[in-house]
Image 1: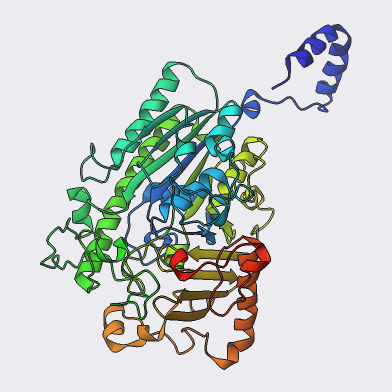
Image 2: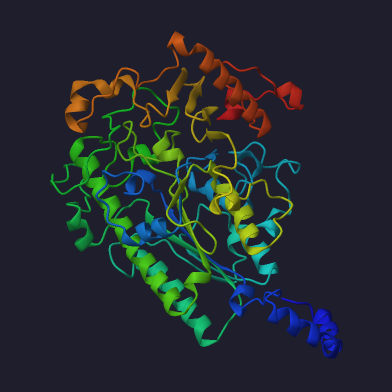
Length: 530
């Protein structure tokens, strides 16, 4: 909008410039912006809890999940095939993931709640700015004149940011009814939009539209459970009933993970209601059916909000983001939870639709969730805060480039330390597992172009292939110890170390140099690292 002094100046000279302006308009040399062009865009940021991209048909053609509204967003927007969360230093992976979204900072440069030492860098003011809450997503948009609203689950997020949303309605809703499930979150958004309409509020808005599902407990609505042949199973002493309508097992299903990944006793692996420590076919397929029932309900609620925006005339001026805080395993690689760095869990679904966004486009992207803050600011014409470390992927949305970075780093250290690390460049991905306490020192190397499901030798076992119907080819395996790929492994090992240094990873793995003294920090003992 023009400044007041600009308008006054224009008014003073009106008599002199009118003939000139009329002449320019007659000859078509002056473009007159329409009122719509001057409107600032709105933002609807949709985030679900615990969802693998492979749930959705847009990422997995085998999926039977019914999501017409998410499919519509994909058809009318950009689908990212390379969207990731950077990782976690906590078993509650949601916590650092959502903190990175709110702050635009990397995983070792964000605070821990309370006195937690999960991130050893958290108390270092050079790495975690003390004034960080002032530079978070709601704070930045509040100052820019946006109306901010949030609904989401309670906990495992960055509270100093959450409290700054002008309107906030948070509650954990994972029940099987409209009052106790996902419809509750949609009702908060719909009520907020109705209030804006009643007040004729024309300010641009930023709505953080979070769901509590499909995180467990995955209690689906009865009619949606029936669609997927699932039940809300609660009896630990029995198996859920088999049903041919249930989703198929993941292609990379295993009955057990082949080695200790440094955190096999985490809650998600042993205590999720309906699964517990079981990995049999009936249990996993039923749990996937429950997951799908919860996600279809989320899709229904998204559709309600999109229709309301359309009725209000706001849809075309609104950027819509759809994503998850991280992926989930549910049987893939013999795992159940989110505490791993395989593609089903490290990746997240990511779709963007809005003004100027290419329709029906697929891109690699190579984005992190922490890039969201920079991107929203860029799209809104707001300067990103000085604490931001993310990269705007607006050029990807507009078709100017296919990706914003070439190298991706991932970390998980919520269990035994140092834990897991990974690095990806092009088609190649390296994962390392390190726990001196458990005697775990494992390296995996995958060519994702040839082995996108990260098959291991165990996936070729007859008892597995009889369930999945897939027999991996000989080259679809862990290549870390294959001498033909020694040079590639060395390249990826060096790349991982470089990323750990660049991102201030406070740990080093068993076969990396101990550089604590180079950083002026004391070498941490095993006890200190627990």
